Length: 124
Ligand SMILES: [Zn+2]
Image (cartoon, rainbow, N blue to C red; front, top):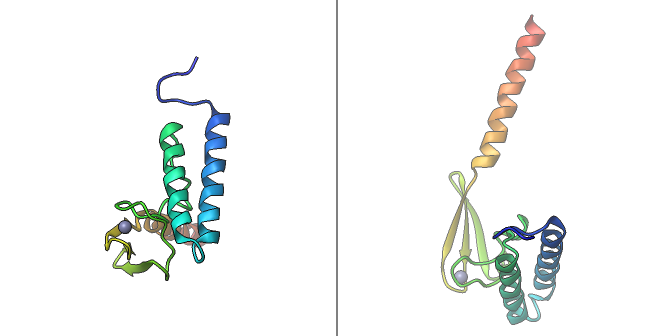
């Protein structure tokens, strides 16, 4: 029996696979058929909702959170690094998405701490 809101792993895998295919197609066809790419985003979002599965990480920021259009950096979107945030501007609706760089920072900090530990050990 299916628990509410949960799906078996194989179903989630299929959903992810489908979303990957849709976004890959969107990427491939954008230059020639941008309207198709936008349609693929809509389909991928439907799968995401239906299977209660997140959009794969590599595609998560490749569509606008406001107008849901496929975004291709340098074509219909700008990507800029502002302070410690990534700003993605959608040229379709002028919406700016701000993505904090926190994770990267945490990794860097950990690397610094580790290098200190290594140094300390070397001193002992
Ligand atoms: Zn937009």
